[in-house]
Length: 77
Image (cartoon, rainbow, N blue to C red; front, side, top):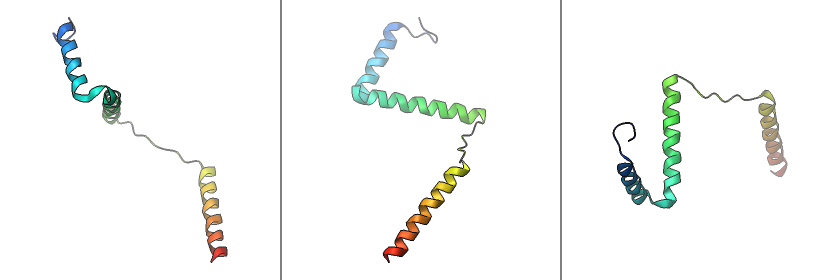
């Protein structure tokens, strides 16, 4: 018997119903989405925030790309 009073037979029936509802192809996708939801919920409860750090080099590289693109547009015009 599992925690909560669910027997092995009941667990197998529940899993079979889930398999019928979602199908074999969508089951991994549904599990992944459920896992991400739980993970995000836990992060929100703990107060963690995901901050993406941008390196100064990356910013400079992007600025150079934009400048080159603008120069090409001026030359073509």
